[in-house]
Length: 417
Image (cartoon, rainbow, N blue to C red; front, side):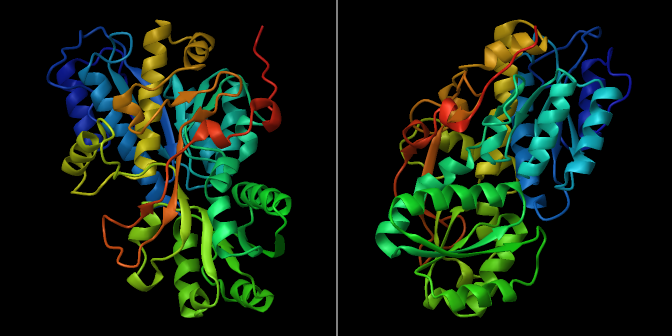
């Protein structure tokens, strides 16, 4: 989504531009912007094509909804907010090229987005080179807020450690000690595997093998043959997006779901929606779930999202985009500035209000490493699963109970002088 010469757009022009772009209206009828108001620009880099397109699409939808709400309430510093969306294709190279365009041509004030951890790492480095605030919406690898943390990068989604710790105990106690892994061969998969194995080894279990599959794999037969030969108690599937859809379909075709427990660290509504009924199975961790009875504001959010997006319930990815855009606005308004360091200081320790957190307890960006501390929702896919009731949450685990400390994660923050 690109806007030209936006410094003096009036409210009518802003509305016309937003409608033409089809991503986000820039103002709501309740607010009247002065002609001289310069827009605050958020660059949103997410996959709209490729393996993670469905995940990126919902992050964009959540962010778009948030931006409209922000503008309805007066924008950022009394100025209209503009969401500029670019397609990362789920790959670091295109993502950085799009970031360069957003910074050099579009003059964005903030960057957000990403699904792939490899993309998130590259965008974090890029943002650091340009002294720009970047909030990683959905790339999970531990290092982003761990050993490779930077003063200007924050993360809304959880770490891979939190994902694996979310369901490790029930998997180990219920289903057995011998596990085999099928792992996407890049940063996200490697981090998940390392984290699970650390917990498995400590508990006295055994990793029987680890089959590394390239991102975008469509035929998992050779990896499933390896897994069957190992005879594990648990088959751990660490893929995401379309890759996990293909893997679970083929796992059922091979009949392996009758021979071992199928499980993994992260499951998402986008994947479950894309599966045939026979492949709806397994034990997983969700990072946010639409059905949270008695949690304030969740039902209202779900209703508004469904009304806006063709009766679809919001997903964890929707919440990532929604919470991230709101957090940037809250921090800038609190800082009364768009200066990167001032916004960073406001983000550090920022607690999301209940109508944005949309889950129990306290959700906040930890000051020491900029990691969001929220909840994990481990559970399983029920036998009678049908949309939108595709997952049963067995418990809600506060992220602070399982997250590594900043020191354990290896974050050593350095700020500009």
